[in-house]
Image 1 (cartoon, one colour):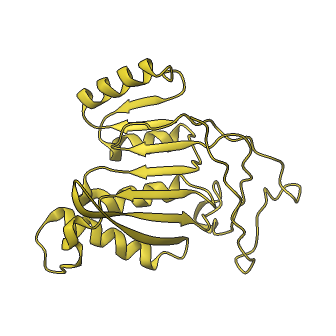
Image 2 (spheres, helix red, strand yellow):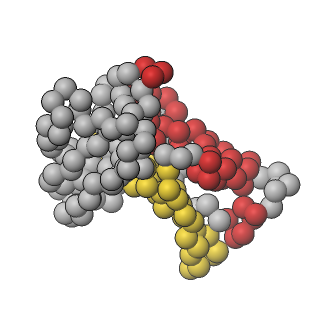
Length: 206
């Protein structure tokens, strides 16, 4: 599991908690602005991830969503926290950059055919809020450049692999093992007209 922390103080607390829980070797804490760290993850070949949790600065939510899809696979679950904001998200003329960031992200979710998403409302001690729950239906086949529009399936075995942006780690997950594709040399590629099957996810052990 990889967690991205902008504030070095939060990273220090996260590492201390991980050591106390005996999970320091299972979770990597990276420090720095996520929009600088995420390109490094891609360059290093990290991913695809099975679960991505976004809980960071809201004005950059559209960019975080774009990166989440880039680091995902068909079947990846994306969760975005604090997206209702006491109902202010419905105010089209709001000058709050956090509200506008969420609205731009919601517009992308609604218009991106690769994603299926909904928003769930919550009410609790922190007030009236909610979170986005999205699933990735398809992604461009990696390594094919601008023509990479085919759908690739990544079977999952073993434990889930996760990434969190701006939030402390919650559970330990490991890289899934990949199986050979159904058609030799095709890596499981399907034509755009093919029906997309979402592979089942296995719950991670604590």
